[in-house]
Length: 534
Image (tube, rainbow, N blue to C red; front, side, top):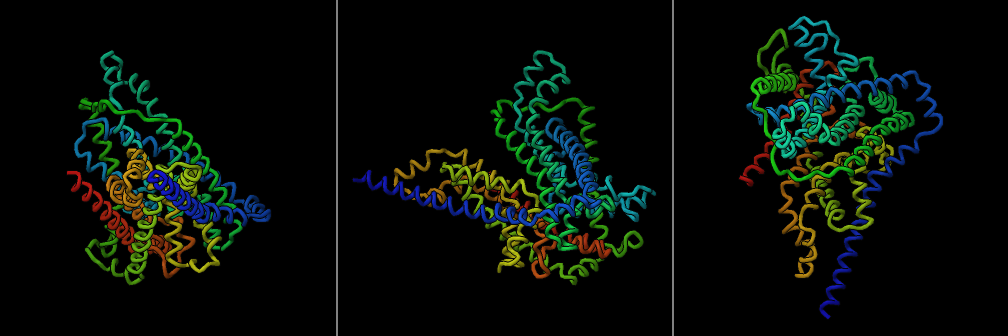
């Protein structure tokens, strides 16, 4: 009798889980797939003809591919060398370098473009100081800005790979007297093959779909992303915008599929022995010099923001002042900053909850719907922010939530959910898979198991997920640019507005506000983790 009751409860619990999966599946269909289908429906023969026959189309495609390929190669090489310097040499202040190298991830891409204008523009700080006649606008500026914006992502990916590489093979090679160069070609390169593929596709997608840097320093060198922005924002031509969005979606989807197939093939092994760091003094000195140079290049745009934001009139009057800050706030920077914080908090709370629930159902309650949920959560990574924003405009423009903070939270959740979902999915997958069975046998409710066992074990992952959503929402410009109104506009969109009005001082203030906020959030997360793991 007792076993029959237990069986009925088990079936009831399973039924509720499947119902929850079905609801989540419908949410993903509504928030991810229907908007894309709606965007595709706006394409017709006339829109395609107008885009393809336009003289700017072929040029923009070629420019996008050229700048993305150059930026990807330079970014990957730079990140690879930096990761080797930090993980394989004995340089001092590794922790400080690691912090500096990820600072560009905490400000919008458009800020990097503005930083280049401040430093190397026609009246730039470095241009005036060194008497340079180099024009930052064009291909060179886009590639430079893209590298500054993208290399921290590649560095973190490769640094993590090197950190967890098993050193046993290198030790065996040293015992056998195999030269260092041969060790690198025979051990390191094969080990890096799969991670490098992931890095290359991730960075290529990041650069080719970005419009912040090209908008600032592209000049007459147009890219697909900037053309799409101008067509939709400037002319409200949704037909042509849908065509450009589809073109922009193609390389992102190809990169996503290739990266997904690459990940499925590779399985990382266990680390039995950490890799030894170099004792070569000359090599360590060279690594230190290289890291210092890259750190300076990373910090220069941030320093330039400070010079513009807190001086009377750079470079003629370097007197410290808060007038620029006050001016920015008079132009509603404070209101829009509050919007950004509220949107970021809402996205972080909702996104973390949805990502955790989805990951739990797909990682620990396997079924056909689980596989669909997993695929749906990952699919958003293949959709560029601009494409997602445009598709949301086309779907929600006639609904009550259009023009509200809610639609901005929804688009940000969908835009950023892939990485947090993977974080918690991997964490939940590592926890003993028999916990649910034991809890059921002891009469413990699933909700209690999640609350008392799983969440405490994953609390640091949940904290990282929250900060990931928050930080990215504070600095995003792509997904929200088509959806924001004057009432709910995020502060990041003011950077382009101030730059267009030649108010670079106010734009610098906004960039520093975003950087400061994100640093505080990251600092809080770091302190909490350090306090509870000490």
